[in-house]
Amino acid sequence: MQKDAAIAITGAAGFIASYLVGYLNRLGYENLYLVDEFDRPEKAANLEGKRFTMQIDRLAFHDWCTIHPGTIQYMFHLGARTDTTEMDYEVHRRLNVEYSKDMWRTCTEQRIPMIYASSAATYGGGEHGYSDRHQVVPELRPLNPYGQSKQDFDVWALDQPETPPFWAGVKFFNVYGPNEYHKARMASVIMHAHRQIGQTGGMKLFRSHNPAYSDGGQMRDFVYVRDVVQMCTWLMEAQPEPGLYNVGSGEARSFIDLARSVFAALGVAEDISFIDTPEDIRDKYQYFTEADMSKLKAAGYPGELTSLEAGIDDYVKNFLVPGAYF
Image 1 (cartoon, rainbow, N blue to C red):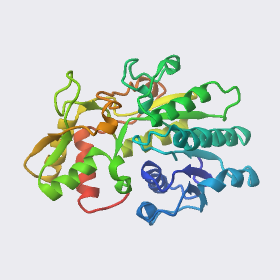
Image 2: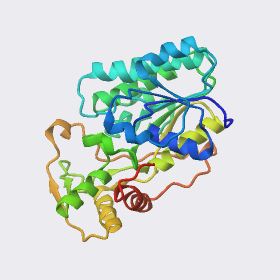
Image 3: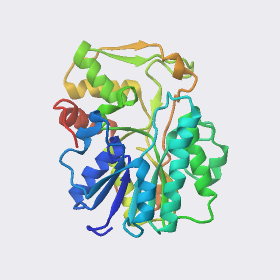
Image 4: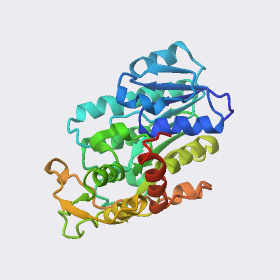
């Protein structure tokens, strides 16, 4: 990508996308077109001090692209409804499927390389593993409407005869890091741990309701947002074989490991207890996820991935404690 390239970023006021804006700024990219709903004050700080060309309302963006063909040269479509507790599929269908189809068609018609956010939620209970091979996709059974919406768009994208000149659907695993302050219940466990420890001196984790896992022994692929945006930027620059790519750490870690790392970063003695998993998510809960990163590595991705301990240490000390943004 040329430094003066016009880059559209949807969901720009949100967690991962706002971090991407800051990351691109640091690489020298400033001709950024930020797309989102910009009326939520709790997200405004994510964009403070960042350099960009203009902001465009999410609902107006498709028409804007039609009126200004040839303006956008690259698109990171990261905007989505990410609430896994929203059980009304129609909400996810409208925001995550139909809107993404509009972005795909725009990128196809105007020959814009496109990266879009998929999700590890598409893997459901993991009964088919966590490989991003396309042959597996039709067999996947997500556990909630959010995951189903991401799955439905992946299936649709793979079936399209007309595509953008390059595209990648990036399957984000459990992303944590700066700029997620606004996410409330949907924020990472690291952020919740920091708040709980500050308020009570201790950390409560969900009790296991699966006999195969001990309390706190549930395992997830936690990936630092810095690694996520580096992988996405590399994909856009290198443009390997189009398709779906896992974006994770490649290593499942337990919630006990995570909690202990937060206590260590804060220099506080460990005090971990357990509460029941809320009933509204209990039967949709993923007990294990681990990204198979072989496809991205085989495509030539050269980056080293951050360990859970190093990522949490950086996040806690340099962002959560001072209340800083990236």
